[in-house]
Length: 192
Image (tube, rainbow, N blue to C red; front, side, top):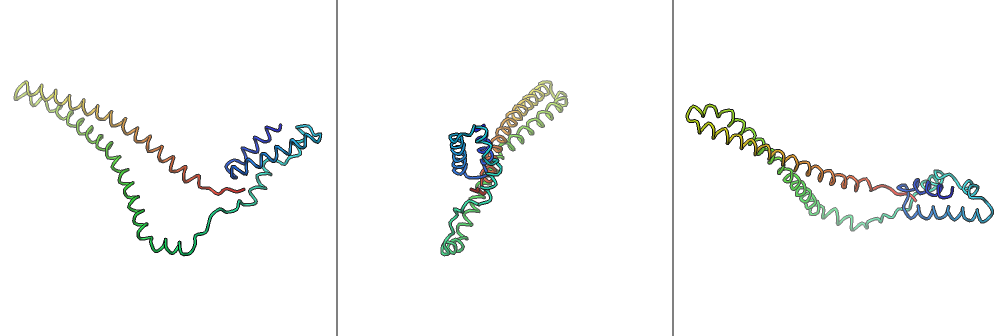
């Protein structure tokens, strides 16, 4: 009973209040149960005397955690505003460089698909037009068909390699996107 109550309390308080408050609250109610049991209560009766975990959470959330944000001095705010053309342009340049790196990285799969498409198209055209080369000379027709078949095979290989490379790019993109979105989601208000 006691462990169930404490685990419910811990689970309910997690992500709603700071970890130190969770620990101190759980320790307080654990100590309260122990004291009640020493006074003659059974474990079930001692747990029954405790408030509902939701009521504990409500009492903690009603009183906001004191703000730990420091107010910036006025001269720092003025300095930031005055220097904003410098740091603002540097921030924009850094964002543009990161975006450019991202675009250039995606140019590699795009180029691979372009090469694969060109090889496949060229191979098919060479194979389809090879019968007209037979009219000039037999070896030219056979050579054109063979070259077309080789180019088509290279195009299929390039398409296969590029599709696997693109899957790896998408996995890396998903991992980065998840990390960025988690970092934004973790910025939430914590109440004590």
